[in-house]
Length: 183
Image: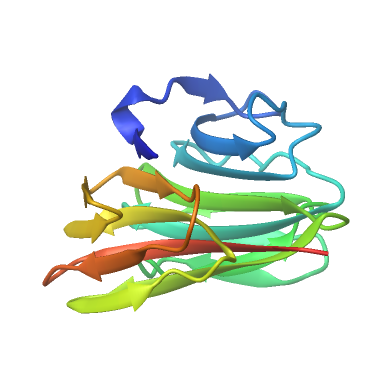
């Protein structure tokens, strides 16, 4: 199944201080309090703190803009300023943000820790990969990707359904690949 980001409605963050476009959640129709996994693209326009998601493992990758510095309540500081470089953190963390210069957009994968282990990988440039059964979503962050008989363009996602497929990245393409392994 192909999802076009422009078809996803912008909705407020759980804390109401920003907006996000949900690409997919499982089970379908789940709320921010009862999803097993969820993928979205968020707009970070101000230095608003992130929403808290107890029991959730989070993965984030900068898509557009100069990024921001995240300060987690555990004392960890992470500069999310390199495009397409995933960073994992706990959903329980209180996260404050300092913009590096203007609005940004980022890709998010959130997975309920009691349900599954998860990961967010980056694939680049021309290559063909067999998508193993742990892949639940491929997000085209740049360029074009051919997968399961369809072509993804920047901002499109392929949601896994059925047998494993092949992803063929074209020159200059970047894929963010979400893995979820049920416990």
